[in-house]
Image 1 (cartoon, rainbow, N blue to C red):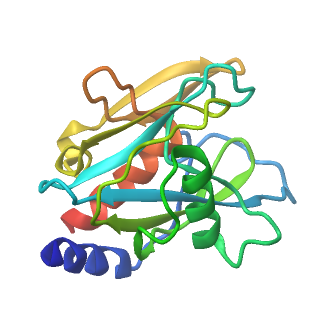
Image 2: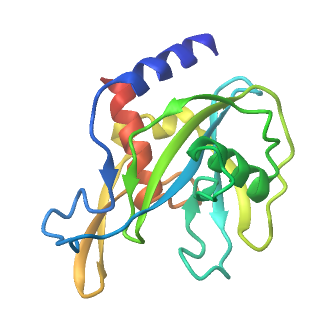
Length: 198
């Protein structure tokens, strides 16, 4: 685990700009003066069973925004949150029952701007002890893990597209088994993979 933490520290310290949902769509015209809301997501890496695995969630199909999509635990920053790391830890506790004291925060990736108007900070954390997933039924349909090596391999990423608001929009995907990981989650993971590879 120490080697992985060292690799992550080096990767997260590398200079580089943030990312956005528009990276693969350079013709997108963003409104001037747009206001982005702060949000934090947890990139939880479990090493409790040996080979590192990334914990992700499948959002509830009943949600208004991004129903059924694969996502990191996380959400918008509340006033009582000390910082976005606190936001990510609080949300992970609420969404999947991860005890706030269990993860060890390693660092953060550059911010990611979403099409829904959020400025998201991915907070990378290590989890050394096992815990039982307790998905919040109103938000999370399922919590699951994928091998970290899968999402850190740039060869596993595919650029796909679909029509969105009358325009063809391109985005990253990194499928794993029955899980279609795409959009902002895949883009942030692709950024981590690039930093780990450099």
